[in-house]
Image 1 (tube, one colour):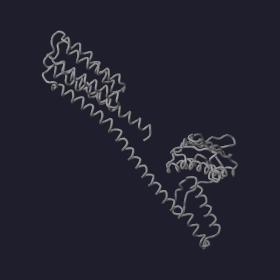
Image 2 (cartoon, rainbow, N blue to C red):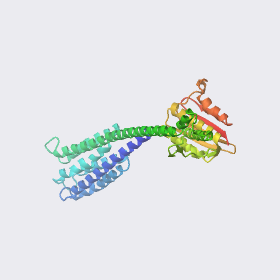
Image 3 (cartoon, helix red, strand yellow):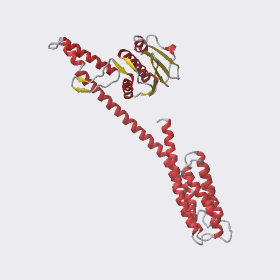
Image 4 (tube, one colour):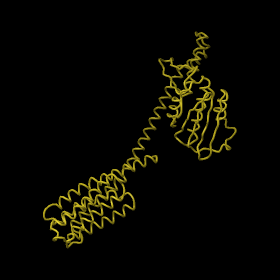
Length: 392
């Protein structure tokens, strides 16, 4: 997966953890406040002293749901611990006998919910351990009993453990599920590309059978029964068809042996750039086009320009080690330029073997035949740029 996808998955995971903490924590806070509001649980002075802390706790839980900052977690934990301390201070009389039961939704639910967002990093786990121990100790001190750990303490332990398990499970399972979905999507794309390639191969075989092979068959039989002018016309149509195929077009047959072809005298550059883009897209190279495509070029110049451009993109696909390239088209009163750039491995121009004629013949010589030129810029690790120029 790409870095962008990983970051997006991490954000979605954190958002889910935060919203789970808010939902569980606010629900438990409301229940705890309702329990403390029952007559006899707390005296009025202690109850009024705890109310502002409940407000702070609820507000912190609300903020945790939309903000990943630890500030709101620490504030919420501090407010909860403050409530546990306040209910133990003998102001205006001793705490009521039902206090122990009222502490459970506060300590195990509202405060325990913070454990969901405290399982993703070691520093957060350290805060989780300290907050849990402080909550357990204050809960046990609130209503002392003969046992080392009372039923209330067990409920607190259970609440925090369950919240921590939920948080850890979500943190671990979401990236794992995302990776599995990504691998399934990648396999689907590979299968679809293979199917498209096979369909294109079959279409190409049918197209050649209906045109070029039929013409060659007539030539093999010395054109028996066919006039020489008809043979010339059919061969010309086949040549035009092959030209469009080289430029990435996909002629559509009206019927077997009859294909719709575009005029070749003068063609708008933009109408053929898209064909080149689609051709390389099918082969796994994503080409981004910039600049203008509304330029008219004579047929022979357009052929040389586009075939040289396609050769540059083929070099990117084979050698650059990347899956995307950028093509910028510009023009002035006399010249049309294309700049092909990639962020691939690059190379040292001095290391190019003179015996390798691909770029020299397929790009430079082809453009020079129509009065154009090509320039190459590259260095190891810095990608490659090729500038193609042809006259209007």
